[in-house]
Image (tube, rainbow, N blue to C red):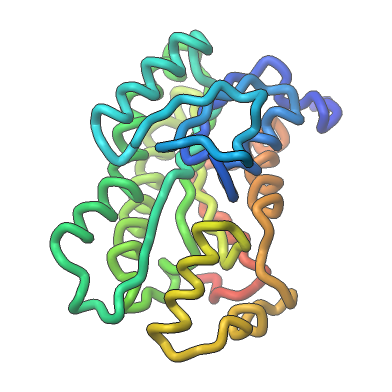
Length: 254
């Protein structure tokens, strides 16, 4: 197999990335653009970090209406989808697991699990029609060692991982690959807030997160984007149904 230059390996590919306004999502969008892809991305609101070369759709994918708005805009803009990255997610910690109420559990399931389920259902038919496609679901290393303050988030991401494995098995005969990427501690606006709140709830210093990483630093959004850039490329054409930890060696790899 001839491997194209990295600057052109996604030439002609049509990608959709949720939560692409900042942090990991924005880095993924830029990585795809740099490789030649046409990208549609979404978030509740754009930021100064949202790559301007991507088509931005204002959509809240934690809702059915938001998913439909994004799916309709993506299909209208792209005509079909080759790559779908379900990156949108949220997980605010509580002082203890007993303080996570029904609304918080439902909200976590909506954004961290059902958003991907709904968007996949809306866009996978276009992949089936063309006999090819790649889906990347973003999970988290927290599923390896769930903690009480973030148990609602960990549980929703665990559901996403199980769903992704089953989806991969079902779609493989149709030429569609499904992979899960589980980032560790990454320096991004959303993660920075979570780390700060977690240290308060657990009585830790923020530097504890750096010390816990064998490679000696928290990750950068580009670290995650680069791994995903490989997984959606033809270089990874025999990879499906797997879960890749990108965490600097921090979490036990079970």
